[in-house]
Image (spheres, helix red, strand yellow):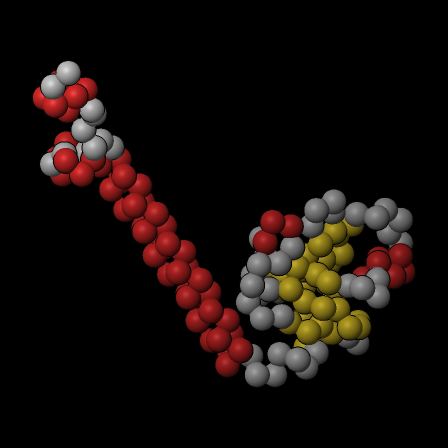
Length: 148
């Protein structure tokens, strides 16, 4: 058997192929581009969220002081929210069940209810994603009922 016959039976390697003949080159470059674009997009969104949080900290320096908020409360299976008179919506955190006690005083017997003209003392959170599926930009922690 001659050397020419042997070399014809050996398959060519990728090193011996020209760049245009490399299998799956276009697919590989496309995948690399998509992965790079996703990485850049994710870093952009995470940076914008950090900037928004930093701005929220500077805007609400007194946010740890309870504030009086007036509005209507809605409690259902996946929602516990307050809509203020100005139209702002907040997710409610009420670990002491202050609003449930107020609902009972107003004659509500169901565990799901709507209360109108509620004045609460609450601490407003920083901007974020609160409540069911992160629907609300801010959350309020109820600390008491404000006097009328």
